[in-house]
Length: 179
Image (spheres, rainbow, N blue to C red):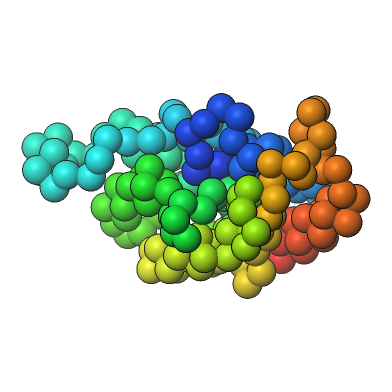
């Protein structure tokens, strides 16, 4: 199984990039071939219908669509901004939705997220689910949200808490088996 994974975060030191690397390692251990993409390579300009009419989909959106099309499944790590989806991620998904038929249709997708707050991305992942399911992605029933991410990782990017590592591993392993 080929999985394309990316974090919808632009910050180089993003907690979601760290979390995504751990999830990718778990997916590889479960037998998946995982490619991690850098969201900065797939972050198109703000959606503008006039731009689309004049020149079609931006190259960044086309590149993201190509990665989606080439994958058997997706893992998406998303920060939570003000209890919702980060603007750049929502914008990228809006551009992806302009390609018809929907390129996310039927794609197994696992949502994960990390935040320094106490709620663990519950609201952001719920908002993300709406956007993904509208495009007919086959969003995995369970998701993983990490709270307290600022103190959750070692300097080399591993979980400090073995229970959190086991929880993520169990979810990713189950996702790979089902997808």
